[in-house]
Image 1 (cartoon, protein in one colour):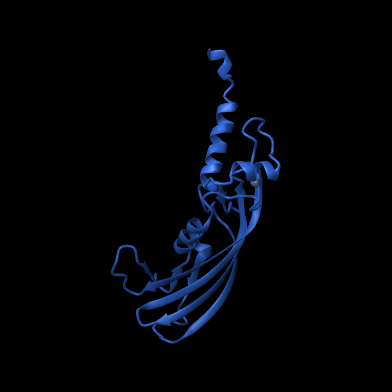
Image 2 (tube, helix red, strand yellow):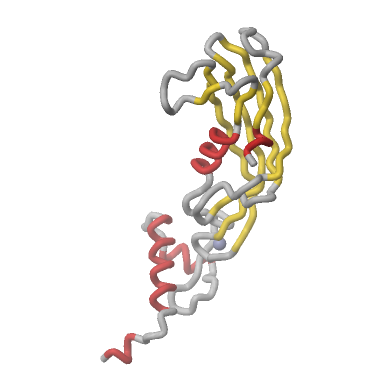
Amino acid sequence: MARMFEESVRDIMNRPGEMRERELVISVPERFGEALAAIPAGEELKLDVRLESVHEGIFVSATAHSTMHAECGRCLEDFTAPFEVEFQELFAYTPTEADEYGVHGDHVDLEPPLRDAVVLALPFQPVCRPDCPGLDPESGELRDAGAAMATNVDTDPRWAALAEFKAVESSGSGVPESESN
Ligand SMILES: [Zn+2]
């Protein structure tokens, strides 16, 4: 299924200085990203690729545009947002390091560097909007923005979101603390 990311470089191989640009529109073959934010299988991904022939191989510069699907780390709502990431990678004719990409036959496989770039760029703690107030730890309802500001005023937003997760978990556990007394 990585085949759709394979790009022939036959026309520019071993011709340093030659350059070619290409635009690929791909339906993502399998989910990119394992956490709250991901690009799911079937989502459209547009890849603007520049392929440059250099002495050692083919130097690829690419920009990917797609749509990220995520769950908000504060209010737990699903949302989508435009996603863009760039990467540059040398595909060597004779890779010398284990982690170096190579030209295979007469093509390069853009999928591994694309996947790495996407996964690194996806937000670890996505938020549906910068001022999302999150859930009220007591009621589990969406808080009003003013209350959230007052509570989170000197807390790192990442830890605040974690604290809210914990609060939601413990209030939903079904064992009210008053009964354990
Ligand atoms: Zn939210």
